[in-house]
Image (cartoon, rainbow, N blue to C red; front, side):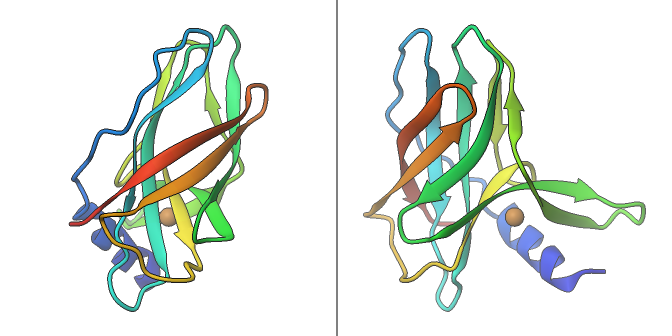
Length: 148
Ligand SMILES: [Cu+2]
């Protein structure tokens, strides 16, 4: 059993609160809603980010890369269950987002792993993130900070 993965998984399982962020209704665009980052508990330099990504463009696209304020190191993670029913998570290179579909990054599923956070932040702040898509290019989003 990977204790680290398990503890992070349990830790994230408690995080089920979501907040709304600004949403665009533009046709032919990629629309991000409910972007949020979990507040960092004392002593930790790692947290998770979640959001909904709606591909309103006529082409299938791919999320390739994410950058966020406060951290130089953001990974796209998936959660998996192994043969022994143990949950873990691992980095993946990209997420396919077909035209017309909504892909949700959520607790216990796909998520952003924001690592190496340089300082703590609290719920009054917002975190700017930049998402880079294969065809659509870059999308800026402001993520709310949420607590437990
Ligand atoms: Cu992760």
